[in-house]
Structures are given as structure tokens and as C-alpha cells.
Image: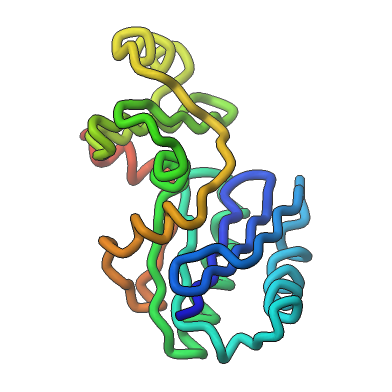
Length: 190
């Protein structure tokens, strides 16, 4: 089974290829404002380097945010288009969960910064127990109050992400949506 991994939530375009849950290839490119010029060529390159075509893919895992508004939308659009046209399954994972999967600590806080504050995911025994967005001063207090190891950027462990995704539901391609600040705030009645 071949799985394509797509992440565009931050300044990196990350395209990974897994076979039966084992990473076989990874492309990681920095792109400050050119995700749109890197995503499809990177997918073509990773497939070509492994002597594959898109028709060999069985499923897709895409990071759906939070993060860069435009970057997320671009990655999701490519993932949805591929899943729909190839009639293959697609699963979404938040950037916070993807980072958390890549870290062995059971109890931790994952943060993703933006210009006004932080997206925060709190994990106890590897389980997401809190997902919030806080302005910078509120975030500092929250982090101080929780006294857990804090991670922000971390190299993705694609195999751990794949294993985590086994417990996620596939989503119809047309139903894949980005995870934005407003949705996180709505979870907490803000």
C-alpha cells in the first residue's frame, strides 16, 4: 500500500511517500511564498524517483492546519484533487497532532506561533486533551501554568504519523476542510 503525505502548513513543503507504513522517500523544501510552485512538482519528483505514478497511490494523509492560511489551502486542494480523481482515501491530521506523533514524550504541549498568538495542543499520555488558540500574553500564562515540556517545530516522523492515521477516519475528498483559528476558538466558546 502506497501512501502520499502532504504538509504545507508552514514555510516548508513536505512531501513523503510510505510503502506499507514505512517511509521510502521524503522531499522537504523551504518556500516562503511559493508553495504553489513546489507542491505538484515535488509530488511528481518523489513518484518519478521511486518509479511510480499517481495511479500507484492508495491513500493520502494531508496536514490540514492550523498554520499558514494560504499554505494549508494549497496543500489541501492538491490532496483533495488527487484523492477525488484517483478515487482513493484521504485522511487529515492537524499540524499539532503530526508534531506530537513525532515526539516520544507522553505528556507535552505543542505550540505553533502566528503573528498574534499561539495554537496550543496539550497532550496527556499521548492523547490530545486541549486544543486552543491564545493571544501571546494568555499563551505565556497557559504554558507557565501547565508546566509540561513544550515543543514547537519538530522533524516529522512519517511512520509515526502513518500509524496514528490508522485510527483516523477517511474523509470524502470534497469534505476535507482546513482547521482555522476560528474553529479552534469555537471549540472553547470564544
